[in-house]
Image (cartoon, rainbow, N blue to C red):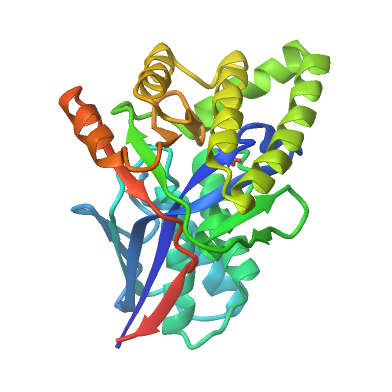
Length: 310
Ligand code: MEV
C-alpha cells in the first residue's frame, strides 16, 4: 500500500521578509504542485530528483528526514518508510517548493499510518523541515501550501483564508537565478539592526499594504493591486531583497504593460510575480520567452494539500 499527497507551491503577493518580523503578509497558492509518495520500507529512504538518501544521511534531503523523525517520535510510529518526491518547480525559485515538499511529506506519511491531522498540525510538522533549511522562517510558506487559496498571515496568529468569487490570474516569471532563502532572510534582518526605526516603520507599512492588497484582490481590482505590487518591490529593493536582474525584469514587465510586478518570496533571484493586462498574457509569455525568461500563467487553486491511499 502506498499513500500519495500533493501540495501546491506558492507566491507571496505582499509582505515577504517583513512577515518574519511580525507584519501581515498576503500569499496565494499557484498551479504548480509537489507530489510525495510514502510506503513502508526496511529503513528510512528518501528519493528526490534522482537523489537518494538512507537514514538521516544526505545533506539536501536531511530536512525531509527531520519531518519524518519528528512525526514518528511524536505520533509513535516506525520511521522505516520510503518517501519519493516529485516537484513541478525547481528548488530555490521562490515558489515554495521546499514548503510544499514538507507539507506533502507530513500529509502522505500520516495518511500511510492512518492518522488524521488538522491542516494547522500538518503545517506545524512541516515547519520542522522548513526551519532546518531557511533558519528563521515565518511559517507563511507551509501555511499557504497546506491551505491553498489565498491567506492573510501573521506570525503567532492562525492563517486567515481570504475568500473571493471568480478567478484571479497572475503571471510568474522565473529570473533564472537560484538563491538561498536563509541568506536573504539574514541580509534583510541586518537592515533591521542597522536602521531599527526605519525598518519598524516599513514593517508597519507592509501590514497596511497587505490589507489594501487583500481588499483589491477580493474586489477584483487588479489594476490597483498591481500598483501596490510595484510599490512593494521598491520597498523590498530598499531592504536588500532585490538584485539588478530582478529590478530589470520588473522594469521590463511594466514596460510590456503589466499592471504591476514585484519579486516574490525571498528575492535575490527566484521569481517575479506580475499582473498582466486582460487578454495580453499569451503574447507576454511569448515575448518573455524570446528574451530568455520562462514564465507561466496561474489561477489560484483553492485546494491545499490533499492525500489518498493507492
Ligand atoms: C519566503 O517565501 C518568504 C520570506 O518572508 C521568508 C518567510 O516568511 O519565512 C522571505
